[in-house]
Image 1 (cartoon, rainbow, N blue to C red):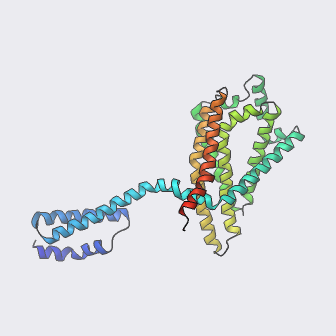
Image 2: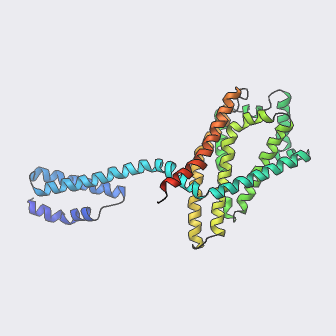
Length: 316
């Protein structure tokens, strides 16, 4: 084929590739393959022609575009955890504070009720659980419940349940935030009664050193899941100057980002509960180190770092 005919046959396609670059990765890859074929033909029959140099440059540009997209895709995950999620957290610090206050008030109310009503703990935790725990206390192993199953089975079951519970708390925000508040009430009352029970048995400090090894991450995540539910519910209740549907879309998107950010935290909490909490006789210093490290992470990543990042990215 003569060079002129080769150019005439393909020039419209090349111009489209040059001036209307594809954004879809698959389409971009198809264009690159097509250009490589044309470039191979041109190099074979017109090695010193300007059209060969043109095709080489065009193919190189598309290749760099593909490579850049791959780099952006791989860095997207890093950017989510390093920048995007913390800024969303910062935007809803008020909702996180409200969720913390609501949860804590319900927990304190439950502890107060348990202190004045001997049947309250059994009503909340159930006779079966209380009887089993009292039996474990009598045996000298008050936290034996964490040793009943093998570590891996406990890890999988706990992680699945925690993630399910957190998403229920979030989704209940659709009920105008009332559903989320009810879920925080249930979880707060359970924790308050549970923790008071061990203090009443003279095992308060020991329970903190054992149970809160995993509880620090777990309960913090429940509170943040509550905040995500409040974000969702408030987007319906208080759309501001936005259309209610647009406000709901934004609230749902931001709330879902918070929930996605919690999944790894729940998994780590389940790992600690399944593999670490069972060693209730571990050295106190080790227990304090794990508990303190978990608390430091929660405070730093969900409180301190978002504030620092916002100040750093705020326009001057």
